Image (tube, rainbow, N blue to C red; front, side, top):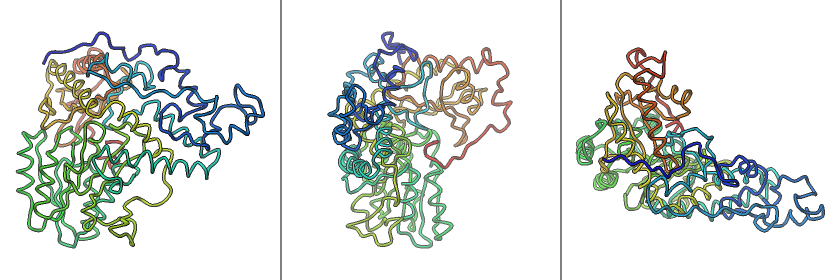
Length: 498
């Protein structure tokens, strides 16, 4: 692969134009007034009108007597609100220059390279503003804001999210994260003592533990099929899974994209399950927002996903999909009186309405850019990263350029002599570069997840720092993997720390 350096692209610490999201003054203005108007979410209802930083009775730029009118006028119509930012123009190429205006919509601290999106996404300024506006509205007029936020979720989030996922609105419910959705799907699956569930060896703890709960509490048997990391092909995965099915298998659970960035043949596995009357559960935490996902085409019975990762939604948002035709196999985990017509899959209780309503801004962003373009951009960056890493002595790639078996945005590799956990801490502290480790599946690996806001300059920078770390020339006192007995293996149960 030919290495491409886009010299026209801005560096990570390039100055921001006045009034752009990266300008500190812009962030101050967002925190003071007119939050929702920066995101085109359409949530600028009457209860949000008072979100100015002016003292009561004396709005900025207006006479004291204007306050009463402002309290009943939608924010978008008041002279206090800043001009809404238009959605970003759709890039026409995957290069840094074509995406520079998109990068300007983020408020990351200058000089920081964030390359750990697979753990937690970095929302653009419009999403942060929308969430802030929701909480501001609740603090000023709670009941009114509660209804406005609920309407926004019902009208501007759920239907559009369903469209993005290739589902019907009645087939999805919002959750706090993928972990909550995975638990609800597993607990709700109709199983009897002695029934078997098949999972793969590469499941995240959040995808494995609900089935272990069923085994402990309900007498279900959980079987695990070993999938190599990396695996050779989709055929190999299907053959291994098929061989592990038994006449007692009633549910099959697996990742769309593994934590190690491997891409499973989801549609084929779902078809395999369907042909045998087995309920199929997909963990889509590392898929939604990175590349197009069509749940009806994939044919899964349930899918659980985080919306705060690749979709760049507010932290604390997720989704559960249950196919309408699977309602006789998957019950509500919360409502004893649920019916197929009113399945009640959603978790009960008070929800984070500003977070959920803020998803409208995330969807605005994704729809403006096009998920297919996001996939092309993330693939472009990861391809360039793989190309640069190939020049490092002692580097062993675990996620390759094969599009059948690797996702666009995550790059996993081992670097001889480098302890992955320590590398994460050292690069963050000394170089302001945020990456992640992958000390599992028998690997002492590093995971770098590149998203649309990263640049080729950051790719060069992280590779240079890793080379220096391996050579210890710029990192005196840092231990090697051999000097860190056993390393530090993590077994997290929170999808937000995936």
